[in-house]
Amino acid sequence: MSSQKISLNPIGFVNSPYKQKFGIPRQANLVSAGVGSIELNEEHTDINCLRGIEQFSHLWVVFLFHATANRGWSATVKPPRLGGKEKVGVFSSRAPFRPNPIGISAVEYIKHQEYDGKILITIRGLDLLDGTPVLDLKPYIAYADSLPDASGGYAAEKPNDDLFVEFAKAVEKQFTLHKANYPNLKELITQVLTLDPRPAWKIKSQDDKQYGMTLYNFNVNFRIEKNKIRVTSLLPE
Ligand code: SAH
Image (cartoon, rainbow, N blue to C red):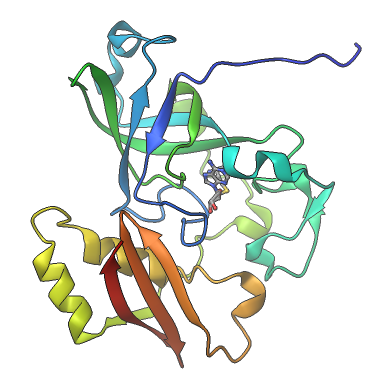
């Protein structure tokens, strides 16, 4: 068959606490404090499209890696799980840089509601950037989709999440100050940082760098001290 262009319409867009690529968990369900929503696009869906969805605890989100879609791809990639050193084929990885930049994430369905003329589906455990275009939603079906005997190669085990995270006093104060609007902020930052978001090649070397990431509308600054991460400041943008 000759090459053919396909055009798709997003059914909606993601609202996510993850505002930039740095810090986003590398798979779904690694950070349970990560809660976001999918806002459906009235042009391509309506509330009837969701009838019965509350019977399912989890959903597959099929989406576009829109933020990096124009960065191209190559046949091999260096997955973080292999320390960013070894190469595997792009189709043997879940890297965003693919011939068609399409991602899949199984996330927890919390609820959906019509709000202010919009349809919002609340989801937990997402690994999605704010503004991600959603191409499709499907219920997660355990008997078909969960394969506990499958071999997982270099990604057989969950990544380490045992890095100790501590907070400067001033940061603890910010948590108290913003508790009403962001009750899970401390938990979110802790869970994101225990996974060590640094690029894989950075992790073994001596590292004095001051890192920053944005979660919700907060700039989170941290540095590595021996075997722990210290959050030095938390500033609303
Ligand atoms: N679960 C998906 C994604 C795995 S890659 C899959 O397996 O297909 C996960 C990484 O994708 C995240 O760490 C984040 O950096 C990146 N990402 C998430 N949303 C993105 C987007 N809209 N555009 C580009 N990169 C994105």
